[in-house]
Length: 273
Length: 278
Image 1 (cartoon, chains in turn brown, orange):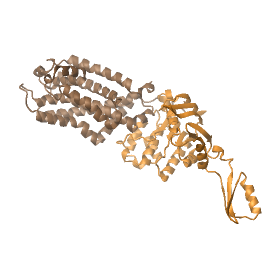
Image 2 (cartoon, rainbow over the protein chains, first blue to last red; image 1 turned 180 degrees about the horizontal axis):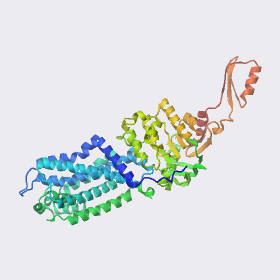
Image 3 (tube, helix red, strand yellow; image 1 turned 135 degrees about the vertical axis):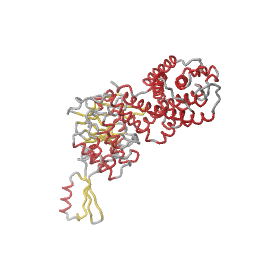
Image 4 (cartoon, each protein chain N blue to C red; image 1 turned 45 degrees about the vertical axis):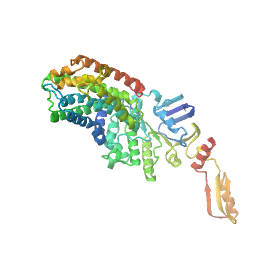
């Protein structure tokens, strides 16, 4: 019998196929859709309504600041938590074992996860922007430069958070507790990073320093630079939008995330050659 | 040419030896059953052959490859039927089969495989809505969709009702008829007897017997028990030559209307074999 003369499917093709079934499965699980997907939008509605108008600044309201900053939370919640919980679940329900018994590559598996997380996060951002625009008069930028910033910010944020989610899944023992465990660092970082507390300069200096190590502070700052008037920059910790620094920090976390994935995820060892 | 070759395989968990030196050889196209009680080392052995588990020592070759280093091309030639997977719950049967088929260089068509495992009327059903038996048949479909040369079936019919088991056996026979090498583990004697060309009994990590269902553990040469109605109730006698005994009884004018001749069943042989090890 001839079996090896036919080419094995490419990692890109298998990754797309993984991405497609991941998306199908996510949206068919209504509990997941409601809790992980609509929760950030609910938080934005609550925060935006409670802290209605306490900015003495033209073109700025607390609700608008929340609308911009909460995009960072939406990305972390979706990319980091959905990724971490998803892999813990795959380990438990046999998905990973099943795939490991087929000629699929580990890279295709992760590619599928990243595709799913990217699509989900994009949808999440659309929902959050929708809430911001409809309820809190958040103006959408009209110049291409701001959308360009939004673009690279979104891509780097999703990749960094997704990779860190993969790495974090190694720390989670069971799928049942994964959501709770992964939410602790996420929620803590939202407070430290000036997403839930505005402006960030209200926080003690050491907190801002700690937050500056992690990606969330920079993501929130970046999204504020996209959606808030330029004059709002006075409320930032550094008194500047610091796009260059944001890009460097997020890129650094992409690299750290990749290294952690390779170190912590056992499946990668013998399969991808 | 052998499909599976195992020499002095060992695997220890902590201080407990799960597999304590196993030798196996399965030629191409054979249905080989590994029989043994729970905890005997069946699953560990199969998982090492599948490449899911690392061995401590010994040599293992599946289709000429060491499973520990088998690459994608090797994986495309083997099929693994998982024991207790609950994945893909939100996909339909057809979606799941098509998806897995996409990882192989020359898969069977999804419809063909679904038909083969008898799930055609469930093709559009969500996997979570399948019964236990249907779920296992889907697992088989996923294990064979890549046209494997060797299929591993680890306790495939645990929890099946009798009818589902019969249907499953038909499926295994159909695969075997296509020339697929099948390694089956089971703790059902009748399953091994119905399906296997050869079988081995494993107990406490070692093989205690190997043979065909008819000859296992010296079953063919074992004596038969002849029973008949004597003047003072049932009488019985052990003999290696039942024909001669019956001829003698006939000559003596014994009442043979309720005569029975029994050989030790596979179950008797099996229980003796694993009993010796305990």
